[in-house]
Length: 134
Image 1 (tube, rainbow, N blue to C red):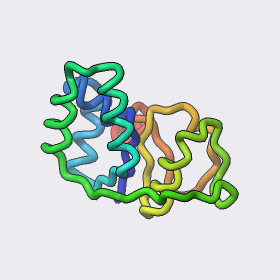
Image 2: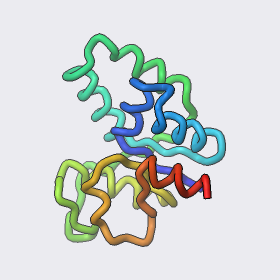
Image 3: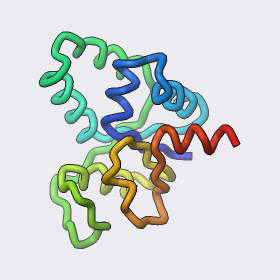
Image 4: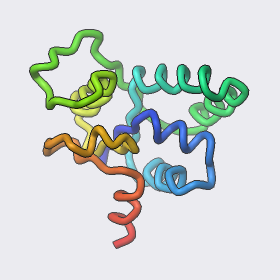
């Protein structure tokens, strides 16, 4: 399966390598194909520069250690072609997850929970943890 990984999953995994999100992400990295977009990578860098400037090297080291396919997010997005999302800054993530033909979008962002879409399925780390431990 193809998993599209949202910004908050990478940030949480890089900052808290022993946390539940990191454990779920590690499982996904071992068992599935991981896709990360250039938009998500830029967002990660910006968050670390603003909130965790002393830990930016930890982010870069983390990203070098994991295997993923890079998806280039379209520069122009026709909002009418995609499901409506409350936070317009999240639209490039949703579009990249759809266009990359991902099966699952893994995110901790509650704005994605209201989106009615068949593919990709949208899971939080907790939801996916429960799913794999059934």
